[in-house]
Image 1 (cartoon, rainbow, N blue to C red):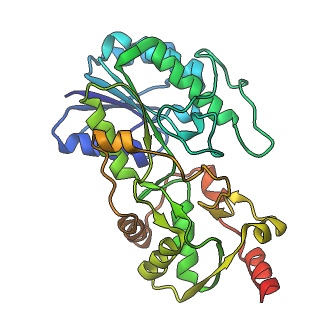
Image 2 (tube, helix red, strand yellow):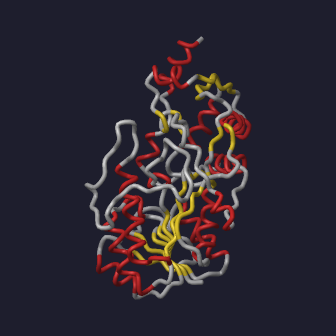
Length: 338
């Protein structure tokens, strides 16, 4: 197997490149060379995926058995269409990293791989889509759905779409799990979103990387939801964060109504917390049947803390600063509940 990873220098792209190299596959990566370092052992090709000339130059390095596109989240459907068109004759198969946000029903309703998608043209620019009043759908979701359509128009049945919900693990750049870990380490009374028994479904980035390269070598097509089939309760999640960090803290479970009264932003100020019924009801049975294997989330928590505790630093990314409640705001809310 010879593969091309679009991206390939940090978090998921880096893990995919490393996992493919571990199988002794020849790996090329294509990126602008601005974020992270190229993985040792790959054929590193630098260029801009929005530049037709760079893509034509990239195609000359082929052919590849598969392309795994990990970087489309920052680009429009039109950009995805440009890349797929330029590389169609240089690749047999296209594995596209997408998101559950492409579904019309997310996060309100339980989802399967067959749930209807948002509608977006394959040649849409950044202006296409809208944000719903309650935070869904999103421009991001429309754009990603348009990206999927662009891939389908060019690669047809040789296209696979992997739709993760939340990815965690060493090297995380968003900051969800790192925030909970550093908060647990600080200890004291910890503002926690009730119910404590709410089950969440994040997936370890390394497990998605393995599944992505399995699909690069596979023959199936279509979409796969990538969510943890067992998950973990929020209570067990926080207990594990406290355990691995040695934090002397105690979660104070507060109901969603009270959190809303205090203006807590879902998904960001208390990472992984969102009240919509479908946010953690995404069925991944098709992916599991095809070979997706997810390690216990406790292992992900432990390994991420080991990375952070050894001076692990993500690639600079604006989303890191969006996550976590300010200590003063948290203390004020906890004091009002005493």
